[in-house]
Length: 307
Image (cartoon, rainbow, N blue to C red; front, side, top):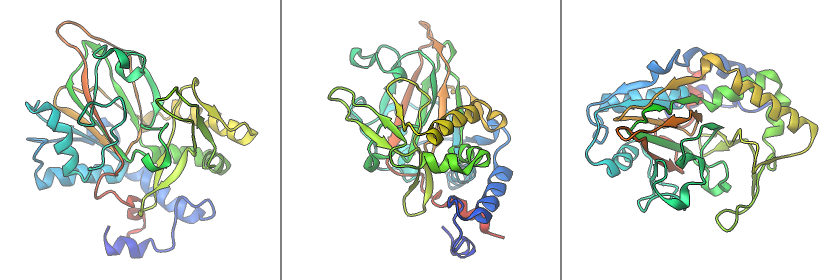
């Protein structure tokens, strides 16, 4: 973060509900610099395991604007190393090696590869509704960034939609700041215990991440295995957030990952369409989750205060 950005934003906090002036300035900047479509997210690279300075800068620039970049490069022979090497170049070192991940901490999302994973939606061909990754994790394991690297697409379907969680925050706060306040409560969303694999986990939807006080969003649109705080404001906030996500329209980026493409993001909201595999095409995507955020995107909100 530059000294100019820090000086310009000193004392301002766009996420403080008692600082509406800072919020309006950041909001206007955020909406003005948001990419118009998914094409603006794409960075063509020669080799994703060895980014050039210009390619690296282009990825970080997109992530500062909207927390998302889409890397388009050739398919790579060192498939298992792709996510690791790409992540390292972006300052992502601390993998969330959850119990369903492969031995190297990266998950291989494909249908029916291992029997113990078939009950989990990411490992099926079923659609996935809006969510951020690791919404069931404890606070010390919040997912700051994630990556989806496509090795093979399905015969049909499997498209992704992405929504910057900061835009979702803006749309909800514009509707009613009290909704943001309710969803920032420490017990706003409860994920029940799942056998021995995962304990009960309560937490907020909106919180702050790291020294840059960036916005973090913990959310799932699923209605099973989740409980919301029962007060009327929280219930209204959840209903409004559902409406906001369904109506986000131009702020939602739609794309279909082809082999050699990867999504890198600061754990934005995303969903996936149902898909159909064939003998010729069987969808295989590597997923890496990190406890870090993409290096160079810390406190990107300060950009709004630089004249």
